[in-house]
Image (cartoon, rainbow, N blue to C red; front, side, top):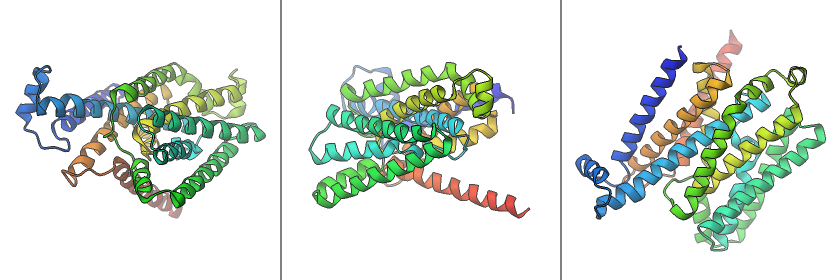
Length: 328
């Protein structure tokens, strides 16, 4: 399929998802009122609050987080040469979950909670890199160290749940399911802009990602330092994932599903795969957020529930396809 045509379709789908998300939302609001509020942004009222203070910031968060998680999936799949790798495979989410749980139990909110969550992600990243360095950052060691660190942090979170109050446990579980409804301009905007900046840094390194997929020996032959490249990309992916987890909780499977599908559509060349995955990730999370707000309206499902269901169906389809291929 022609790449220009694919990107045109992705842009159209993104714009359509934006409009759908903006004109629906968790509260019923006539389309005419939404349009009027957009045309008159300084007019106070309920519509202004819903559109300008709730829907538009949430829409922006969905796009950035979706694109960020998808780009991390592309990076990690290139590093590990494994199409089923994703940001949470390497244990970064476990550190973020631990930091957020500690913040909730201590009664911290806003900027302190984001800092603790982000610190947990960084600690997880450092531990994974430290353990993986024992075997010279081999792919197997990176995956195993990520799984081990993830289990370790999950056990600590379970211990905190065992001694915390039921209210704190409930709040922590809801956060860990993922949500885009807790937008605070003073804190989250900075984190979202940091995600955008880090994604911009990734684009010029698309060629290096192509080289890494050839294997360690060929990468060295082509003049790229394998160890330094893996550390650089792993740090970038962890930072982006840490920011995403800090502002929206744990939203799984986006980094797994999108790169896998886009690789089949635009091919393995990361110069096209990376931006295509960013667009598709934004679309997936926008549509998931729209569905999460509409299913049990006026209540709201955690967006992680929607992406988890989609990811489960994706895994099932992947498994059935693999079994069918083995039987041939």
